[in-house]
Image 1 (cartoon, rainbow over the protein chains, first blue to last red):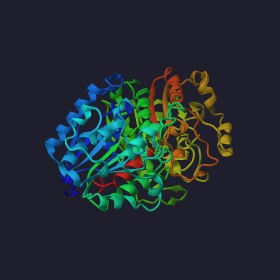
Image 2 (cartoon, rainbow over the protein chains, first blue to last red; image 1 turned 135 degrees about the horizontal axis):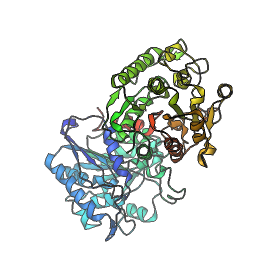
Image 3 (cartoon, each protein chain N blue to C red; image 1 turned 60 degrees about the vertical axis):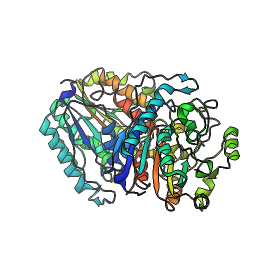
Image 4 (tube, each protein chain N blue to C red; image 1 turned 90 degrees about the vertical axis):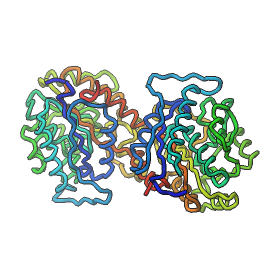
Length: 291
Length: 291
């Protein structure tokens, strides 16, 4: 496994259906536009999109009949390149399903997953109808069969380290406690980080897949987040955990892990650039610019 | 004069020196990326940029020796096309100097200027060393000779209508009062707008150039503004007027004017997309993405 960019597949996946929010679509495109240039292969997953599309709950999962073919396509694009490593630019959190399943199959027990997120992402459709909240559960081989079908080598609980998770609800807390899952809390990240190295040594982690949900960031530091939508009702997110890290702290915990093992996967998800979206829409209604 | 897009020159001007803030550079590029597609000509003004560039005060104006050639280049690009109308995507507010001077020369007394801004932009280098604060003064034929050299047909005070200006300082208030300049206040914009039509009728306005400084918007509605920098000290902008409009209100006042006369110029300035800038920088320091 090498960190050579030429052998790294960059996968752009503007999936929005997993969180049922159109804003993810431009979020992925803007993320790709802002990303450093690469000499390696770049692919984009087919994601149907129009402003007027309305999704239905289909047997528990909103937008199921659109989501599953998209995951299928992402899997096909990965298999076409069979890369040593990959970068995923989303899109909602579910974008990492096929990519991380591929890495788990390829690297097996040597792979550790650093899940940088405000949330554990282990819900089922019974708790939440948006499938982006169940991606890690599916990667662990549990939950909806339409999702777990993509996971040939489930990721074991001891191979996962959370970073930035806070204020879990009771369901999440029980799930994590039952499996003894590790968490590097925001408090630890703000100080000396010791739990990451310990985890990697104890569990024999030789390479890393890193899921970076931008909602691990505080809205005070970064505004392109669900919770920072300037037009959302004030109480829209009551009772839902929000990120507590600065961008510098998120980078710190990621690079802490990266110094002990090569990174073979990096997924960035949940980019919701309200200002860019609103500005784009505004320009469409101005003289000389709009139609 | 027609509103046909094919005869509209789109000028991208990532000028940052007029506000001495590197962030304008990506702001202009992102604005251009977000703008609706056009069938008309598109040009980009040469603007030297690197993250390490540090500007000096040169005889009153910061970055003078870089700024003046840029304005010169924007003038040359406009003359090359000799368009009926133009769109300017900035960059700091000074980007509208050569474009609006061109329109003033072309349309003379028939041209009205709607200046949608939190600030009157009539400072001299004695009040403020950043030349973006003096662009309208220069367009009126007053101030620094390096700026006024581009203005063959000064815009008269009665041909200007401000929209969104609030909390002027004493110097600004005196300048406006002495010349009897009109202001459509945020309060009027939030209700029934009557002063715009009255101005256009009384002053014989037959076509419009619209300067849209995004800082006319409230930071509660839009975050890609100087005053919304998440990493600025809390007291950094004490005593400086901030915008009070929502995006919808800014669009409302622009389209109110546009219904009474064709728009021949539209400049959008002061886009400072902190989240995009910080995200871009962050990705440069992440494994698999950065160098």
